[in-house]
Image (cartoon, rainbow over all chains, first blue to last red; front, side, top):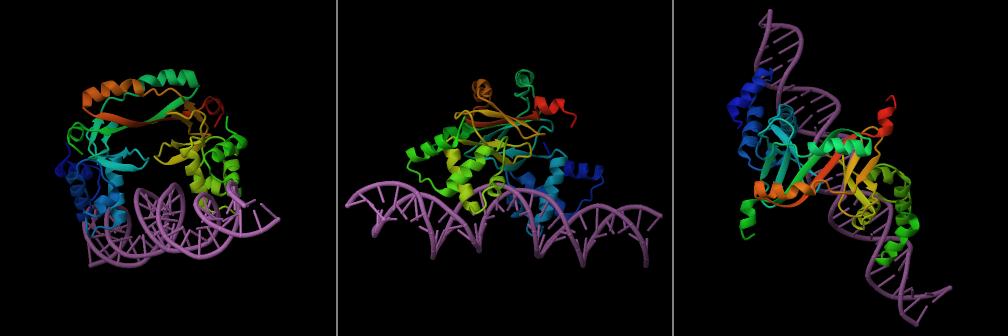
Length: 140
Length: 140
DNA sequence: GCGCTAATTGAGACTTAGTATCAGTACTCT
DNA sequence: AGAGTACTGATACTAAGTCTCAATTAGCGC
C-alpha cells in the first residue's frame, strides 16, 4: 500500500523537508505490522528524539498515512492505514493485528438516532476487539 | 436513579467500609451532571487524596455505578450510569451532557462481521458525539 | 466502651502518553 | 555568503493513572 518512496513523494509535494530523522521514522513505521505505540517507534530509531518521533507520527497521521486505533482499555495505538477515509477497525487482542473495515457500518443508524434523541450527530468511535482467524486456530 | 443511601447500602452489602473519604467522593460524583474527569472530583473533595479518589471511582465503576465515556479525542471521562449493563453514549460536545443508549446497536452487525472477517468478536467500543437538542437550539 | 486487626488512607514517587520551549543545526533562496 | 525558516534533540512539563508504604481507622467481637 504505502512504501517509503511514495511517502517521500507526498512529503515533498507538501514542501516538507526530507530529513534523516523523518526517513528513520517512516522506515520504522512501515516495518511494523499490526498496531504500535509511539514509544515502540522511539525505541527503534536510536538517535532520533522522542519529540521528533511524536511530531513525525502526527504529521503522517494528518497526511492519512497513519491512523489511530482505539484499544479495549481506552488507550490509543497507531497503525499504517490502508484506506484514507473514515473507517473502523477490528483488532486482534492476541496478536495485535488489525483489520480495516472500509465501510462505515455505523452510518446506517445515524438518522434514526438523531431522530430519537434530538442530537445532531457529528462523529463517532466504533472499534471491535476479538481474536483473528489465525489466533483463534492456534492453541494459545 | 442512584442516591447516596442506595450506594452506601451496596457498599455495605459488599463488606466495604463506609469512610468519610468514600462518602465525600460519592457525594461529589452524584452532584455532577454530564461527564467528568477524576481530577474534577479531586478538586471537589478537599482533604481526600488523589489516589483515594481514583480508588473510589474505580470501585464505583466495578459496581456499575459509574461508567467510562469515551470522548472524541480518545480520552476517557466518567459519569453516573443509569443502566448497569452494556450500553453506549451520545455525548454533547457543547455542554458535556450524555445520553445513554441502552440498546446495543452494534450487536446486530456482529454476526456478519465475524463471518466476513473470520474474527471471533469479543468486544467493541461505540460512542457518538454531537450537539444535544438544547445546545443545537441555543445560539452558541 | 474497648481493643484488635484488616481495610483504608494520604503523600509522594513513578509511569505512560503527549505537549511546549528553546537554543542549535541545516536547508533554501537569493 | 548571508538571511531566514524548517527542523532537531534535550529537557521540562502536563494529564491520567498506578504503586508503595507507613499511619490511621472502621467495624467486629467482647
